[in-house]
Length: 170
View (cartoon, rainbow, N blue to C red):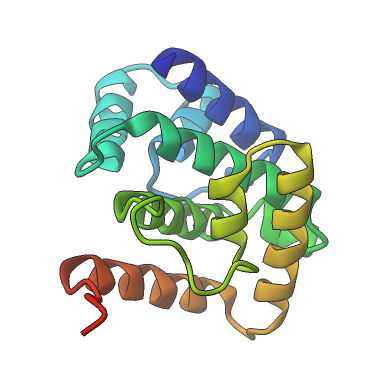
């Protein structure tokens, strides 16, 4: 099950065909694996394994996080965001780390206030209809910002803060 989830995630990432410009670093295990395959590098296995383990730190069950990230990448592929953004390694890295942060708070335990948030949609349903709806929500989310990378970074940091200081309803 774990290997199937990782394989599905790798396929979703490769469909985006991220640009492999020299000096541009995405930073995720998917980016390292993709870059190594494109440049026919050897000796990247341990780096990828370390990055994958770092991605999964703090998650009781990694499978939902892998499924969420795969669905997010599929939503990116189906979205109406500009193609250059879809293949931008930094943008993809920011989205992947946002999905990681979102999954680490275990959204099943703390439902979202905004059911129209693309990660909430993709977490709750990972079928084709949910991915299509998530793609529309992602497009709307990205369209609202001049610098999507900065906004995604901000959202990820906000989720991390919320994880450490959870709202108790008091």
